[in-house]
Length: 444
Image (cartoon, rainbow, N blue to C red; front, side, top):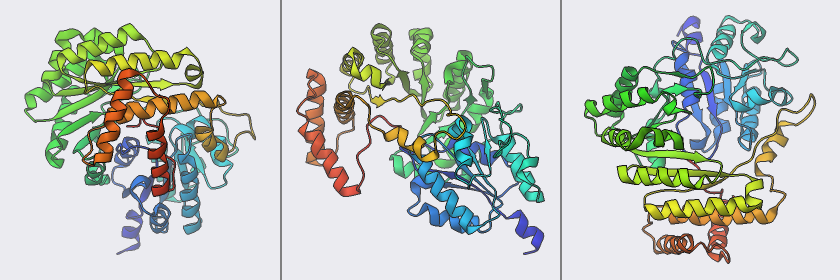
């Protein structure tokens, strides 16, 4: 191979740190697809037995190393693999993007291994960084990047042009199917929220064509729209639904919606969605708005659409009457339809960026697992979250799992969560098997 050919094959390595769930890393997929004509390798740390070894192998010949960062525990692994990449190749440009790099780039630079951060939407900044690395220029010449000691850079808005088609060959799609136990494709059809000025959605005809082609290529039976605000344009949603129905593919799809979106759609709209393949809608609520949520659940049941009602519970709510109100609504919804899910999630509002010389990356990581000040409130939430999750889990084949589910169903039905010996035994067993505490339920 010629020197020019070898240079073309230098990979741009995009890394997804280990985290809960098995959702496809659509953010990295969008970045990799944006770098058309470049050799891109996406490494998902959730599926790697030795992620640092894999990164070291690639880093020796890489053009640039990019890490997606989320404020919380994944930061520690992001730092470990970045250090491994730097040790393998001293001159390798290392760029971090994602929520944490946007929220507090100073803590990233303080590690000494991050050369630049791409705040906000990262496509154009990453493209500029790759072009600089390819031509041997410093990252300081790349527009849109925040640099150590440099001026503050505002988070970039989504690109002014629509993003290119996602290249799913960058992912080991079969691995995600295997991990989930279902052939489900994740897809992003819009970006932003309806309240912001930067909401942008792909044309319905493009969404229809791409999703149907993906379903055929990968023999997918399910489709999950991972949009932050899929119903940001309700008319577009119904156009997409009609196109999927006319496409004739046996493709069941799911999306996230707000409670008001379901109410605005009305019975006719929900019937249209159901007829077009919609099999599930996820409703996220941070407060127990009893009557609207019960009405949403009633309408979803009537239209035969499965509802997943996610309740984010903060420390303040768990320590007062808020948790009891949430549990009351969750029990009422789960009693309506055995297919409904009502997970309770531990919610923590992360603080704002600290002043210069403030919070370290390690301190940010500790925030996520730091116990609540009110230990009793945290235990109350943990008990209830555990039993709701077990009650709504698919029946297991083993007698122990089946018995646990029956006991959890009884607890949820009567609202009794004290004396939780079975939870203690399950969590102790998980700790002995894996060496890790069992995470609080309510993930993907």
